[in-house]
Length: 308
View 1 (cartoon, helix red, strand yellow):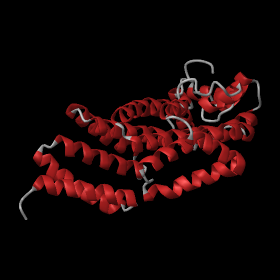
View 2 (view 1 turned 90 degrees about the horizontal axis):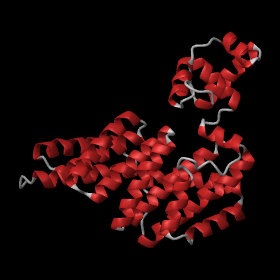
View 3 (view 1 turned 60 degrees about the vertical axis):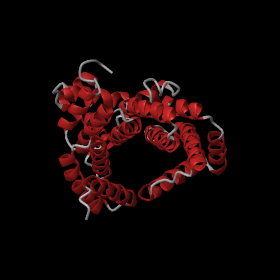
View 4 (view 1 turned 90 degrees about the vertical axis):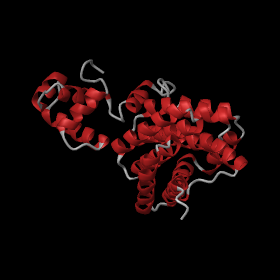
């Protein structure tokens, strides 16, 4: 009524974020787009960063990872230009989440580490807890690729990180978003079932006693380069290459070099049927559908140029 377009853009943006947190993605996107049109006309860099960040997270939540990455990068550029530390930390955190969803654990750790450093400096403890939870989730995803005995040894690390995050949330009364609560509860159930009730409770209590710097360091250590070094060599290799065994990795490498199954069988001194079995396992483990996709994966992992 008073033609306060900035105020209207702000409220539309806030509505979009609130509805996204509740899981109403369709209405959230409508509000955020309406706000963005006003913001672009106003040339307001702060609200631009907020809107792009919201739209980026919305795309992420809907599985549109390329679009999410582009929107979040654009929001990060706007926030860096503005010199908004909290906004920079949020955009970095969401970019880390995109990397997590893609299974890109090293890039995820890099951006989350920068996000955590900023959040610690500005006292954003709720944001610190959120980053810790994402790092714990990465630890779980990595551990799922291991054999059950090693998984049981790796999972308590994730429980400790989650316990530390929960303690931080309790201190500042920061709740997990309603839309994320079911997945969080499922994660805790999986950890408790695998580790056992007593082991879970002990690891959770130990995590709750960690200082923030200790919790951050332990969380980052699990996904930094070399973070799998504490595992037995064979398990560490499998974790690095998405669960593929040495023979499966060699098969993927030869596929990337354009070899047929018979040529792979000759090179590996096995039967063609064995190679076919390796190919089927690779497709299943990586969730792929074709040899071309295997070749792309092998190139991205650096397998096509050197023997791994």
